[in-house]
Image (cartoon, rainbow, N blue to C red; front, side, top):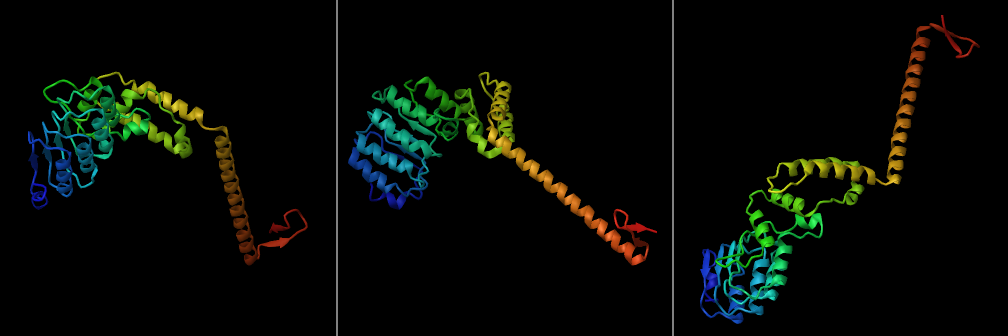
Length: 282
């Protein structure tokens, strides 16, 4: 089968190898054969004898930019926490897989599900939450083994506007925004912050996001947190600009005065006097 697959994967959309006693060696051969299967959308490997080596081989396929799989079924394969961590780590940059069926894999404990929770919503920072996986939508099956937090993130991921999905996750998990990293952008960042909160206000949520107070708090933190040295530097810059404008105006007036004097001399309308100013009109 592995020998034939490279010749068929260009037209193969679904591959079902359930209940075939497939082991790790067979999986490695299959994944190698599927590496260039750019039209394969659905892979079903339920009820086989796949273990750690096989999981790593499958994870390599899922991590490949050439992988277009949208549904993968690993039901009843004795996947444990090690396998869960392997899959969660490679799906961080996968924006195509929507369903990863892991039902009837009772060996996955809280540790394994925590890896998937972090994959779907990394709460360590606002930026990492934004960069979390917003594509994966289903990990269950007929049994109810998916924890509530993972299930909640999966439901959020069904939204078609992925920017809104990311915003909602941020609002859920970050009640205080640190504005300090934006100080280096000067005041140019403030309109971006305000614009983000305006977009957040348009997102549908089933909780009190308290957008208004969060926006005011962030604006206050941003303005209050601008370093004094920056303000002094900004004021000096503006003062220099004012002085430069005044000098330019003074030079312009002097130039106009010289031109006027020249015209008067050419018209014979002035004479020299010892009075202050030197030249007097007749």
